[in-house]
Length: 476
Image (cartoon, rainbow, N blue to C red; front, top):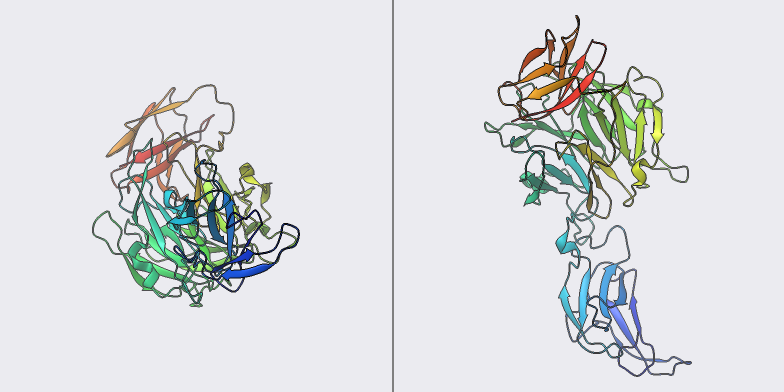
């Protein structure tokens, strides 16, 4: 770029080992350059660039005034400034002789969710109001020296069942950055002690898990460290290698929450809960569940981030984020926990928002379709509304049942379009696949009591007749 209006190109240089920009003044000609002066604290007349590490300079017109401005950002993907990392200098001179005035350090970032390095969304209703909130985990926020802390951003859903709206409550949920766990904390939430509230496991960069018990006496969660370095049924510390990404889910359908744990190598570990509702006991069943891996052939690591869910047939499927950024979709899980799963799609939805993807599903709009929340290593998240429908098996000419009231409080009435056949049953599943209630279906109107259930969204399935039907039930 021409920095002084002499029609001879000057140079701005960033170095891989430094955080400054150096301006070199060209005292030569158009055809024979000769650098005669330097500004090592460019722009020395304003706020000098100090952006670890290896800053790159970009000369472009951001405000359409026909004068190119200056944007500076690091070239690296790690060990560099990963928030407030897009510096904007407005050109108050001319296009040929610019004078740069610093405006902000977080261009664009100020108007979006930015959690530093890595972004991993996990649904969690933190205040028990029946509206699903989001915890956004991360690898960490940059600090000089490279040992920077991981935090959890809490996005509270302040909207409605049909229209979500998210408000930032805190960027350091429960001050977990001071917990000593370190980088790449990743949470999983589930009631593992049978007391009706959601407890938390945190996976860490070392491949281990840490148990935080929910000790709150109100609907708002309050966590206390109960067991660092969670152990299995043999009292051996659970260690999956590196970058543990846990999820609680009833994998085998026995009513107990099991553990799925993704890891750096690209596989998913399956720990079956062989304990009780009140006291889990983790037994490693498969270290490569379903034979799946998300490691690409050109790489040795995959960074698997699993999310198992129930489709509208009540069958288990799984999405897995990966180091490449692709989201993998696996089916063929029901009754096949020891066999190979079916890779339905290795580029689910053609979604690719960057490396180290993470994925979570929830019906945030009350439509019956699962919305998709994605994360990536750049530190931002994406929201995909009703990107796919999970289908209903069999012929469906009309909806065989109606529910009211829905949302429910004390209970919901299920009204059928014809009497239920002998052996028909109504089953209620939590969002984690756990069967929480089952009642026989008799006649054309069945009352399902829900007062004992925690607030949230449940899947109601009718089975045993000539048709099956599935509906969402909101308890609040």
